[in-house]
Image (cartoon, rainbow, N blue to C red; front, side):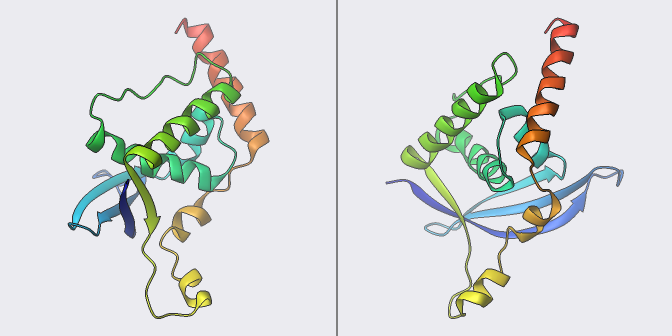
Length: 157
C-alpha cells in the first residue's frame, strides 16, 4: 500500500536576491513525521503544464508534488524528456508516471483540519495559494509548448 503524505504548509518566499518569487512547501508523512521541503518557483506550475501538455492547474500541482517524492522511493527513476514528443504524448507519459507513483509509492493530499464543517475545511485549503496564483488554459499551454518545441528544433536539441 502506498505511503500517505500531506501538504501541511505553503508560504510565499523568494530566492536570496529577492528576484525569483517562490513557494516553500512542507510535505509530511504522518506515519513517521518524515518531512520534505520543496522550494518551488512560482513560474514552475505553468512551466510544468507547458512541458508536459497538462490541462489544469490541479493536474500540474499533482505532478509537481508527486514527482518531488519519487526520488525517495525510486532514486534511479529518470524523468522523461517531454520535448521530443507531442504535447499529448508528454501528458500521457507524465500522467502514467504520476499514477505509478500513486499506485506503488506514495500519495499526496492536503492536511484537512479536523472537527470543522465542510465549508471551513474548504476555506482552509492549504493549496489555495497555488491554485489562485495561476490558471492553466489548455489552449495557451498548447501554443506555448509548440513555441518551445520550435525553439528547441531551431537550436538543434
